Length: 139
Ligand SMILES: [Zn+2]
Image (cartoon, rainbow, N blue to C red; front, side):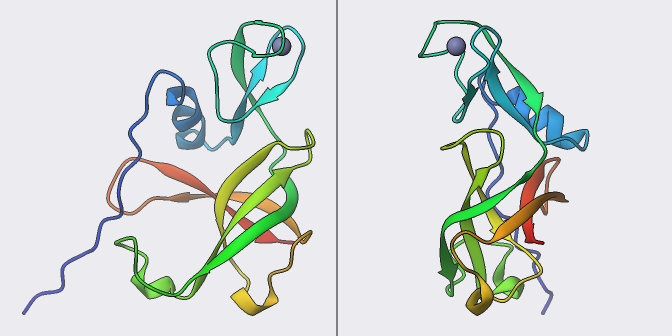
C-alpha cells in the first residue's frame, strides 16, 4: 500500500488573471487597478467599469481585515485533508473599501477567528503545481 499525494485543483489562468499568477509566482500580491481613475478592481477586468480606463496589476500591502469566513470541516478539496478544520475567509484589503480577496487563514484556530480581525498576506506554494497562492495570517 502506498500513500498517494492529494493534489488540489490547479488555477487555470486566463487573460484577465495571468498577471495575478505571474506576480504571486514572483513573490508579490497584486490586484487589478484602473490606470485612469485609480480604482482597484477585483475580480480583474480588462477595462474599468467606472471610467472605461485601461487596467493593470499593481502591488498591494496585503493587509486588511476579515470580512466574513467559513470553517471547513470536510475534505472537500484534495490536498487539504491534513489541515482540517481550517478557515477560508473573505478579506477586505486596506487599499479600498469593498476590495476583497478570498484566502485561507493560517496560524489561527477556527474558533479564534472573528469578523474584523486584522490580517496580513503571505504567499504559499500550492501543492502539486507551479502556482503560489495568498494565505492570510492574523496579526
Ligand atoms: Zn477607472
